[in-house]
Image (cartoon, rainbow, N blue to C red):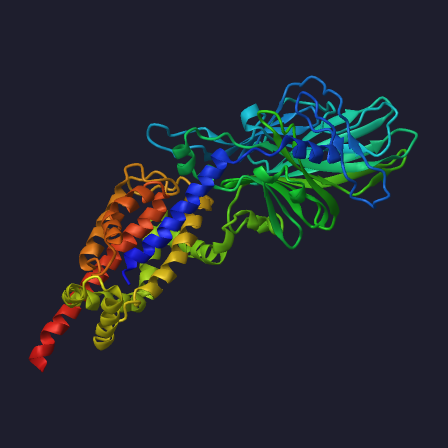
Length: 578
């Protein structure tokens, strides 16, 4: 069987899959408002005009424990933001609740560095901008009314001594304190701890009870985000890897990694409401992740919900609520958690928290993608270039599959030599396809040619294709990785050189493998337009994937030509030997 024809079938399935994903993003019906409203009513009151998140928080303690609630009153006017700069992060902290409302990843520019733009702006992971809203909030909520009625939640106005903090040269740790105190004497000190070279932020909330009564409540953490705006046209969305990637919340149960896309937040059956020990809650973005990480041995209540589902920019929330806290008069207690705001770098995430490496989600092809990424990393460590590493990966795979593909090419060469005899059978039997097929099978059997000899290598190659596709699509290391004229191997080739090279390789392959006699005329025409089809399809694929298949095709074409030439020489020499 012709390798190209088999590959076409799977390629068309791949195209159909990506077309369906793009269509679903653009034209999927919005979630029913009444369903979303019912889900929200079960866990939250209507949010205030500023978009804060009021409503009841499920208790992580026993079912009989009082249920704390987040106040729904209008928040105080926004105070001046506090800027925190480390060697890897630049953050803005809103004194209202001590929320993180902006985060720049200084080591990861939004676009590749070029001669014209040597210092592009950094990637923004958190933002208070309405269209790109993504914030990290935390606070304390009491299970009983305080004397003043105020609570140190994410709406409370905290105080910071300075409006700008920076990690100085030679300084390994930076602490930023924000304080809140009510009229009755309850004081809360929220401390953010930053360390050099780290995207993990330590968060502590110290409760000093200066009142005459015992304070009881819960600590909570939550992430809010809107769905990223679409790039514009359908084609822009299809070619943008961020819109093709998963968008939504994720969490780890201590044993299992689970996800909830934004489009399913309104489905009651998909809502998260569970007690989890040793887990974490996250919002995922291509190449990057924001995650609240409670203490490992602590059981917390996890929930998801949609805020303002009928608005132009509904906000999606994932929240964790800690166990009940009790602080007697004159006593103190500190609640701890961690926040990860940074890159999704394979092999390093599990050191932050168990299971966090799973946020690099290769799906069903993980078993292939993970070792392939490891091999690429080893080649990159030697060559210091991801493009060269991809070429070496091609040579390694071709070397391992050399004998298998040799069987395929030898079978193709034998079938090529039989084409005149197959054509004669077609002329003999005319439109009687049944007799013609029987005669062809008899001919193949007599000449010891297996028409299915090319299928097995293709079936082995396809998982590699998909595994490498996800590696190049989701691996942070390949983002903005340059190679020759290509500024970013994870993006399409800007000059379409690699897709054209692959099309030329396909033409060479077709020349060595003429369309089989007896093929349906429509199929024959499709085979002839395949180079054009693949040129268009590969034009939108990551350049790294095109590089892999262009080099793979060149090596394969060379191997096929050599074997075909060798078979021709064998057949020419056979009569002389006889």
